[in-house]
Length: 376
Image (cartoon, rainbow, N blue to C red; front, side, top):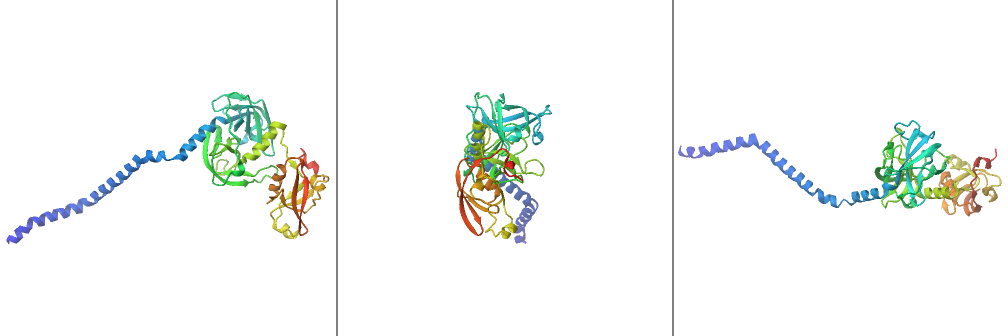
């Protein structure tokens, strides 16, 4: 009896403790878990300034952006040009907005796209600081969709051209311009691909592809690398909706420099001409003509008295290389020839009747009417 009385208080306390744990333990565990989580979040938040200090990429992006934006301009056009590609200027039914970039501050040269200024009655260039300049003259090349606008060289900033041949897939880039009429818009992305071509075969392409956001109004603006140099001029997007889908195209800077230098110096682009109509053969055509493969350019027609004819090139000759550069398709061949300075003699490797041979061709200036070189 005395033993029972001795253990009874302990038994009651144990029951009370058990009941307390049963009733309140889940809430206590939740509170402890919450306290631990809150402590972790506070620690992360407190360490944010340290993480920000080592975020060198953001700092670099800001510095490059600040350095190049003063040279990026808005191109306002009035007239009857191809304005369906651009956002119209509010209150101006006959106006449109594109982008451009100053490449020569001493002479006031602005590069943009030909389709931005096509058939314009008046062109106004608006700088980042709000100053407006009326174009003194404009020269363009429809085959590459490039144009040069001359403005007064008054306290201008410029951006240098980079080497687009050194650009690699994965490189980080900026696109800067006036999408939807919003000037000085900066977007960031990467080089997605090189050597892109659209379905149009009447122009010189070989575009750089980027996922940096490009929209209507960006055309004519620069694609910038991380050193602050132009590696392309934004020209088009691939999209079913007509808005950015992460598939932007830019004209490589090396082509831009070559063409714009010629526009400034000669008033027109000076391209090489060989006097050949060529095509990329299909597998069926390659089998029928006993070609070694389809990577090359097949001669369809030879202009009488043209450079190719004088060098002995014949119909159905299969062109493998130009000046030791491999020809992978007919577009590449067109680009190679166009980029050769007229008057230059170049070796061209061809495949004919099971044999490979080299012919020397003297490239001439491309005529304004190339169709006239191939009489029907």
